[in-house]
Image (cartoon, rainbow, N blue to C red; front, side, top):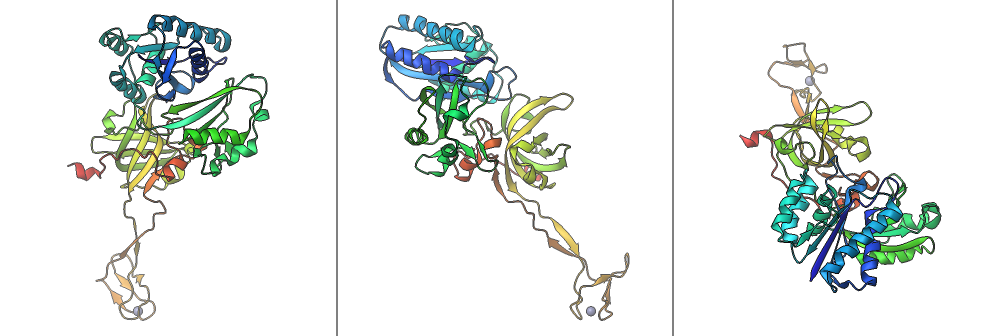
Length: 440
Ligand SMILES: [Zn+2]
């Protein structure tokens, strides 16, 4: 029988990590003979980053396999393993989301994945899912907020994905930098055999693969090919201080949360993309840029933050440009919903002109104004005219059409980072775009 286990929130500010909890659980399940065939890589699913109630990193995990022992034995074993993990590593006992699904219920759960990815999910949604499951879905540690993530991880359809190899360290005491050759880490992405990305960000000269804080993760190698990740790990040659490693299939770096929306649907705590015409561009104190766009349904306030590396492009936009902005909508006191931009696509550029005086038809010199309302005069040959109009000369804009995304260092978990965007990987679906006038 097929079994899916989803977990969310097994970490705490004191330590632990949901990926590590799944690693320990999987080892236990294999040792005790529960696992017949593993149906896919374990899933690591990042969910809506703008929801206020969430766990650190906002990641949930899931595991799918053919069960070899009795379902009645599995539930207490999983609960015991999670409780042991919480006691020993995380130092907390409540609020962990644990969901177990017997048989196939993935199709029904895929909807909850998209909701938890792009919107706010109320817990009553879960009550409905339990009722509709005919006993296939059980929540052995109770119904809590973490169950949303646990179910979303099981329901993830995994149509767009990358991989992450996570190395767990055996002790928090040794600094991570002492266990890994940073020089090798900085060069991994340069070898195309490994198909890794965002191990190191050359633009800010920073290792991105090593997290900070009291976390059992020593490092995470992101890539497009699981075998390449194993080869990259061998190349790094980490020989001490590690408990083990595990490869997850993940929605990270896929921009899966960039669903097309109208401006009026970009409510606080939602994610998505809006395409429209720029109506104002304003530089804000501190280096951020405020954009206002109108998509024909209304206007939207968007902020491009310095950390995204996109402020240069945002600042060079003018009224009349057509852009697509993707990201998460936060609630700002006194303002309402504000889109925090993670992807900026320049769809169409407004034509800008400078006025230039015409050329003298008699001698070819540039004419001068003869005074307000008096036409033009030529200082070289004395020609005068009231007939000629100023010339409109197009201005080069210095900003290119196309998709602009943050470099690895400025990218968040779900954001498509620059190396993938440059390679054309996981570019979000094109939403219908146009100028305001196209809608009437
Ligand atoms: Zn002249």
